[in-house]
Amino acid sequence: MELNRRGFFKVMGATSALLSAGMGKARAAWVSKAPPDPYGCLVDLTRCVGCRKCEEACNDANSLPPPDIPFDDPVVFETDRRPDEKTYTIVNRHSSGKIDDRDKLVPVFTKVQCMHCQDPACVSACIAGALTKKENGTVHYDAGRCIGCRYCMVACPFEIPAYEYTNPITPKVQKCTFCFDRIIREGGKPACVAVCPVEAITFGKRNILLVLAKNKISDLPAKYIQHIYGEHEAGGTSWMYISDTPFEKLGFTKVIPEPIPRLSETVQHSLFSYLWSPALLYGLLGGIMWTTNKAKNKDKGGSDASS
Amino acid sequence: MKNKNIKTILLVSFSFVLVLSITSATPQSAYGAKTPKADDVSDNWIAEDQAKASKRAAEVVPFVDKVVDECRLFRQQKLRKMKLSVNDIDNSYFLLDSPIINKEDDQYGPVRFMHSKHAASVGDCSACHHYRPADENALETTRCSACHQESFMSDHPERVGLKAAYHLQCMGCHQEMAEGPVDCIGCHVKKVPDHADFVKLGVNPGAIEVTKECLRCHANAGEDMLSSVHWLWEGPSPYTLCKEKKINHGKRSTAINNY
Image 1 (cartoon, helix red, strand yellow):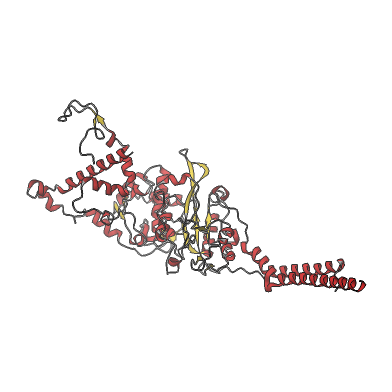
Image 2 (cartoon, chains in turn brown, purple; image 1 turned 180 degrees about the horizontal axis):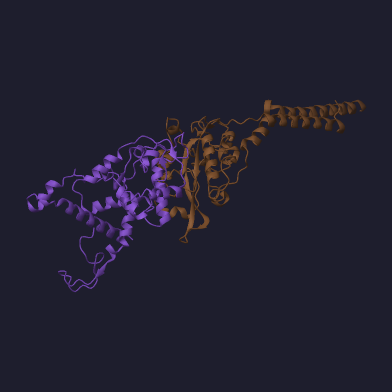
């Protein structure tokens, strides 16, 4: 086969058409693996009083190391913190920008932990199957399967998974467990939820919580902002927030309203399904090699004959 | 810095020994005979109203499923027209110690709630008794734990549990009125864990050892003590024997028993 310029473009055109057709087919075929009726938590930020009992309860329930600054010391609010390998959840203090009738700034306290996405990016990125999305909504981590690649940390849109860099022998990825062992029991609640003195966190089925959140917002439209953070963020999360202050002011990341794995998995599954794209690529390269070799041999043969 | 630490140790152990000596000096040992009061006041004695309040706190009343949805102002007017006042109160004192709350966690002691005092100073029953049961035979003002029991009931997702109901009501009102405590220990006594599990001391420990053991966990308390007036006081002491001419007699300078 003589591969001239025209022929080459023909082949490439056909390939790209095939590729885009494949992509289109896979995009339509991407299905969410979100559990239908997961548990969730609704955090009402207007209720949180910043007592940090949730942090203390979490530390206790998960046998985490004691904190550097005691749980009853409000000095921690001076810095903006993130969950790390020693703390699964933290409470930060922000300013709502409002002043109360005694001329004091009204604080807003925000609890930060793993959002337990419906279609988690970390689960999609995990190459060892250490992270899984359970039926009850938990994004569950199995340390026995983890190989320490930390792709989950790169993938997470909320920057939650943390790594035990200080533990060289058996390092683990650490994040909120949704108190998996507790909530699988009848009537069990996550430790932070059970301890909360003002029920700033409501625990229940996600579908019921969504209705509750919508009712709360429509009952008091002047109080709450018209947004449930976590309803659509990253395709929906098990943890959701309602607030009286815009979420951008409270350090909440703006996340696209569709599942993060949709694009990556579509690309991945359409390009690499049945290994057709590498097969095609190497086939093409092989073909080019074969034809050029053939031409070379012909030339060689020709020159031999002339001499 | 080292000197400061030693002084802290000396000081705290002094106070510890002082407390020990006070507690061990019971009337019996001091006077050799029982005072008549010691018979009445045994460790098990509980005040009558306290006993009544604890008994009432332990009750779990039947759950009120439906309430009359009344506007807050309407309800305020209604209760005023009924002429409800402090005189109608049967229980002037409550112990907020429901078993509904206590099965979850028990970090703090129960709140002692002065019902009559609150009713008198607020003067508006509807501030707390914000709904009434739909059952017409029920009391107009029912107790909190009739409607607020378990958290996150699937039939009543909007209704908060008893613990949250108490906290939201108390703290919300205290904040709004700028009166009354809004922190944990303003209302609760914190349950201190049994120190027998933590304290590790040999037989007949010395004063300095005891202080060191205390400071092992309570280092900050020692530091705080050193900057307080209990440590820093000083002045002339014309009536103290052998120190009559001192003008800077004080805890940190010339006093003895500073462990």
